[in-house]
Length: 399
Length: 162
Image (cartoon, rainbow over all chains, first blue to last red; front, side, top):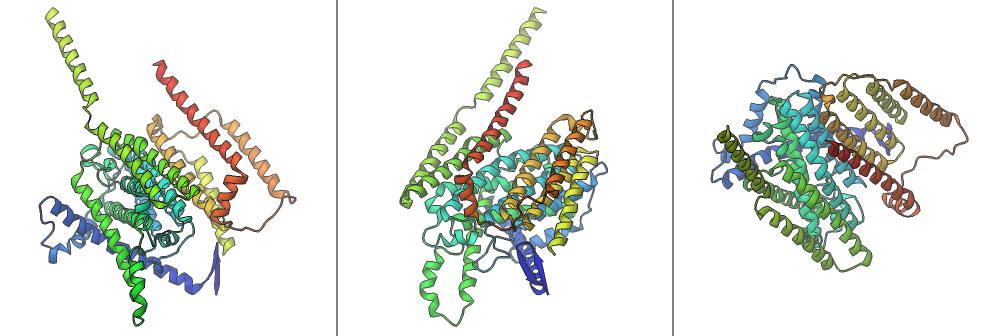
């Protein structure tokens, strides 16, 4: 029996296989999230000279399971004045978009649910839908802090969406395709991190902002908007948001690995291909090694994310927006321009490296100057307050 | 199967559109609009227009709805979310009827060329967009730029009057 779907005609067996593969993806990602929870607790603990979880299982390995059980057993409170439909729909939208992205992210040459020719476009398109869920969550919970957090998330995430898309375009230009497998295959000699370091830095920073990790977590900053869009959520609903956040973090790390670090290919393939054919007894060894290598890169990027969380303070909202529009967006446009020039004139690779490092250096220096300059606004406010105080004193003496 | 999908997506599109007009809550209207726009992306997918479908989700489903919600939440309408009609409704009815007549005429007109759906590759699309249709493309971006500048000017004049 053949079922014809748009773009393909498939047999019933293939449909069943798709369902099984989707379930496997959900399970795999859930396991990944558990590992990330544990890794984050451990890494943060070490960064703060603590041990992290130790009591639950060996090295605290059972901690994420304990966390999950606790969250699920918690009472699920829905505020009376909330907009029921939106309150329920928001977490669904957030988690769906987080999972949808993974349909087309390959873990190795063969391990991908459905490889799309326009894979990168698909990923950016569905990443934007997640923002919608956050905005709706803030609105639906009928809470001032929720609405404020929702607005903050909308402002922050649309702003940082632009550099992400632009840099993805630059990487796609280098590979001549938006297909993630082609992009990885074209990096088998030199990863794009060496050709276009600017792209990797911008993508990583803007990606951090996209998933709302520290130092860009102002939309759910506990000290400012007491949790933002998640204020009124509790128990299982709340855990769904954090499931989505971890999956998105993992997706950003995976994309950094795929787009700029050569995915499963570099430098393993060039080395491994030299001696693997001599081991015909294990044909599965090559694919397995490439998955392991890919996961190694992804977890390395994830550790950098946790490291940043452990060391950077949270940005102020105006600093955050200024950084997006005055540093990230121009840099991402610059990366497209230099990539186009490099491709058009067919210059050697190191010229692009040089151009992108120059851009990074200039913008970095400007940001550094701005950050270390004396706080002009603070001085202005203090002067104004002193003037007011003096005036009040003068008038009270006169009276 | 394709017909079944078409019917489901059409119901979602039309139902979403109806919901936008009927609902009394502005935020709900925006959500119905989202349903409608994403269903249109599904219709593009049936026509093998992968790129168009993804761009529809990216721009309409994501960016435009978010900006809409942003505007709704930032303006005072958040305090009065139950406005359902105003004095402009006869004008809107006339405009809707005119669009309906034009679309109906186009639907009934058999002389229009009919082609099989085909999916051009991404490269073909880029080539035609930036070579054959480069000038309309640039004009479209110019129009957007003008709209942007206009919006800024309107916002700034309000500031000066204060």
